[in-house]
Image 1 (spheres, rainbow, N blue to C red):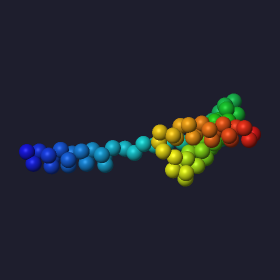
Image 2: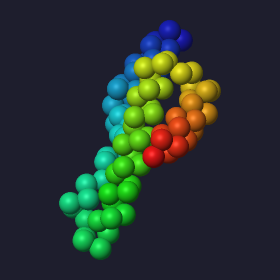
Image 3: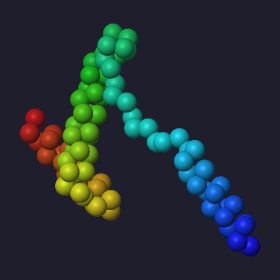
Image 4: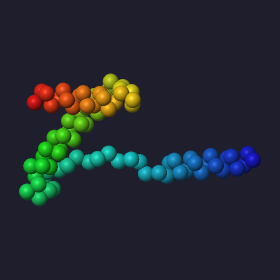
Length: 83
């Protein structure tokens, strides 16, 4: 019984460390898209930068996961109001 438990724990540990880490979405590079899509790519990159800024603020303020979405929405609204 104890040997089986050790085997299960060992397999679980190996599986945990062997799993590929989740990757965040990369920033859009407007210079790497076709010229007709460059304006849209620039807008997308600006939005991604605003989202990252708000996510960083949430991390620095240690916002709880349950409150994170509301915090991010409020932050993005506040940034949009400034512009």
